[in-house]
Length: 149
Image 1 (spheres, rainbow, N blue to C red):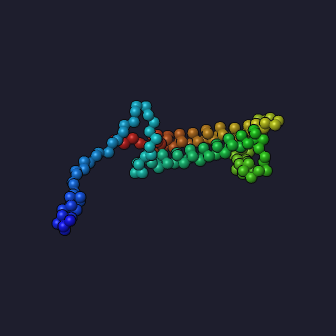
Image 2: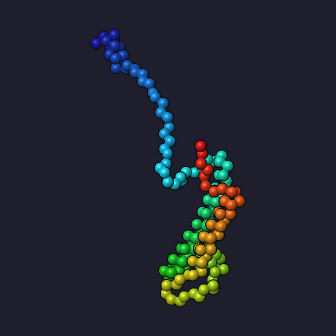
Image 3: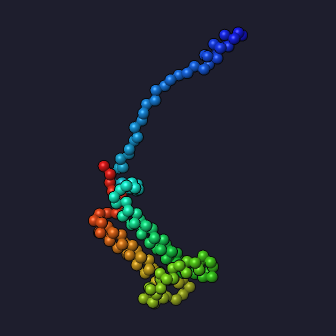
């Protein structure tokens, strides 16, 4: 094979092609009617700080309510109070339950029903709802993300 033949063969194997690329517009899906929008609002939205405050309040109260319900379940199932995790839950929730102790008589027996914990859960649920409603009333609108467009 000669040098010219090798160069021709190499050129035929390395042919270049050009293709045109079409630009594709982003697709914005319209949610179906009645769907709930769970997207987060843009940071520059005028209601974003109010929305953030209500979300933080709801998160904090949800954590408290979860701890209180955990306390209720541990007492109902007769958990060992000297175990570290159980003692931690009792220690955290005791100040939250103390104001409600003694309102109703404490039933005695192996399954201990903590009525004070249930009252505390209901109380914090109502407090959270009132705080969020108060924020909405002061601002004059809902605290959720504002629709754009």
